[in-house]
Image (tube, rainbow, N blue to C red):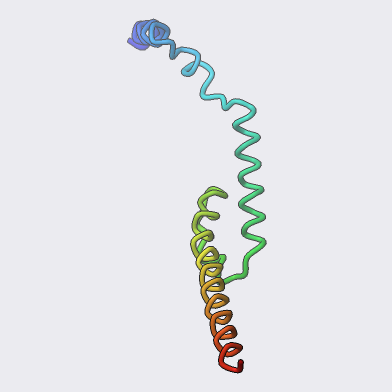
Amino acid sequence: NYHQWSILMKFLYESQELWSLVENGLVEPEDLKDNKKKDKKALFFIFQAVDEIIFERIFSAKLAKEAWNTLYPTYKGEDKTKLVRLQTLRYEFDYLRMKDS
């Protein structure tokens, strides 16, 4: 009998402080909605700021942080490579200067 079952379930949910969730559904707090909207906007900006080849690496990201974390090691590695190359060129330049002296 649904009527009896529903009364028992209502008392069970109320005793566990779950009835408002069952009755009203899950209501997201406003700040959570705002944060989700901001995250989608940030993800969109990341998508717009990369070329097609890079976009293929991040298009499945659902969060801006996920896309960012995928891109970060790639571009951070470029910085390290440039730094090592610059240090090598500086060493070669100093060596040539000393050789001429």
